[in-house]
Image (tube, rainbow, N blue to C red; front, side):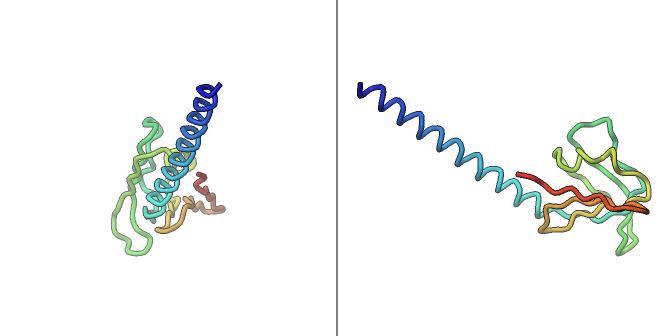
Length: 113
C-alpha cells in the first residue's frame, strides 16, 4: 500500500513543479516582450510568407529618420496581415500592447500569458 501512496505523492510533486516552472517561464518571457519598443510609420509592411519573423521598414514619426522593426516571435507576426503602407506600428517599452494605427481606426492587441 505504501508504494502506491509514495508514487501518487511523487506524481503530485512533479505536477506542481511543472506548473510552477511553466508559469515563471511565461512571466519572464512577458517581461522580455515588455522591454521591446517599436514606433514606425510603415513604408514596407511585414511579409506574410514567413510565419515567425516580423520585419517592417519605414520611418520614425518622431525623428522622421528611416528605421525598421524586427521581432522574432509569433506575437507581432500574428497581426502582420492587418498592417499596410501608411499605418503606424506602436509598441511602447514597458507595455504589453501592440497597436496598429490606421487612418480611421486603432487596432490594439494585448499580450496574454
